[in-house]
Each structure stands twice: as C-alpha cells, then as structure tokens.
Length: 240
Image 1 (cartoon, helix red, strand yellow):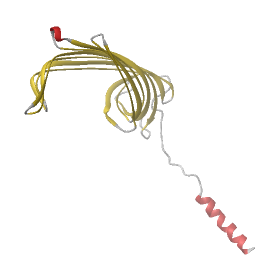
Image 2 (cartoon, one colour):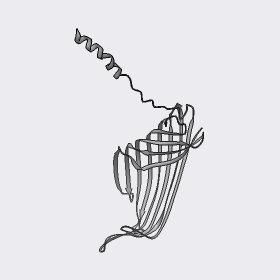
Image 3 (cartoon, helix red, strand yellow):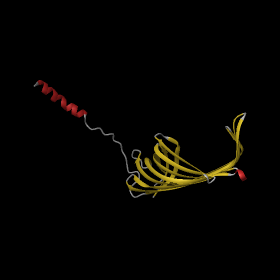
Image 4 (cartoon, helix red, strand yellow):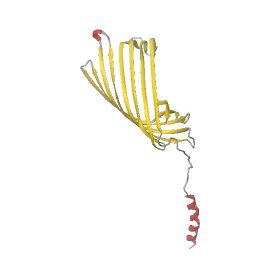
C-alpha cells in the first residue's frame, strides 16, 4: 500500500512535465487572397573582342550578344498561396573571326570564322507559399515550386567557301525545381525579390544534324540537391 501511495504522489509532477510546448511563432497574412502578382525581367548583354587574350586563348577577335525576356503572372487563390506561370525567351549570337588555342610552345590550334545563332523558349508552371518574418508585412520569405518545359534551336557554321561546314541543333528540356526566396515590399503594390535554386531535376534531349548528312543525339539528366549560386536571380514584382 505504501508503494502505491508513493507512485500516486509522484504522478502529478510527471504529468506536468509533459505539458504541450508552443514555440509562439507569430505570423500575419503576407499576400492576401485575390491579389494578382506580375513581373517582367529583361536582360541584354553584348561584348566585342579585338586580339583579346584569356588563359590559353590568344588573339580572340569577334563579338557576341545575349537577349532574354521573361514575363510572369500569378494569382493568390488563398492567403499566402499563389499559382500561375512564367514564359521565357532567349536569343544569342556569337561571331568569332579568329582565335588561337595555345597549350604549350609547340602545340597550338587555330579557330576561325565561327558563327552560332540560337534561341530557346520555356513555359513554367509555378506554385508559391509565402510567410512573413514575425509580424512584418514588409519582409517575408516564399517557397516556389517550378515545373518547366521548353525547347530551342541553334545553328552553327564554321569555315568559308568549300571548307564551310554547318550543324543544326534542336533540343527539348524538362525541369522540376524548388527555389526559396526573399521578398521585400517597397510600398503596397511593388516589391523586390531574390531567389536561389536549392534542389531540382532536369532532363535534356538534343538532336544534331551536320552538313545535312550526319545525325547525332545526346541525352543528359541531372539532379541537384545543393545551393546553386549560379541560379541566384533578382527582380521587381507588382502586387495588384
């Protein structure tokens, strides 16, 4: 009997130690239901080289340009949840008049009259989940899930006259990824965003035809489960 009484006396303190624990994480609605989220990013790069030297490349002469446009549209179907899409188009041109690849004093290769024109397009389905930092309505984070399908074409030519050779290339791309980001509101309707890819899976299938005779194919797969610093992007977005 004494043993039973002792256990009963200790039981209340054990029950008290097992009380539920709450972290008291506060959050407010960051993006309310019914808002449209839209943005547009445009980039253009151009460079020209004249007898430029870089590592083993000497006498580089030519010019290049790269253009890309990417509009985005999302709709917040529930507080702090939005879905929509993004379309991307890019076009690039490279003209290389001449360059020397020097491996050592006795080994070097010459590349001249190289021309490459390419363009690609991508359609992406997006889903975002927002959450504020504390009770702030100006600073918040979001997780963006992407499912992208796209393709492209490229034309490569080298040489002149009877030594001219060319390759036509078509590719198909599939990508699934997760990109968390930071959102900072400048006012009630505009914000700055920065995001970085942390994981994803991509598949690329390429078909190449050289001189309208030789056919080659290349398939590649890649899984990424780490922070990809080369995928960091910045943008301005409107919340209407």
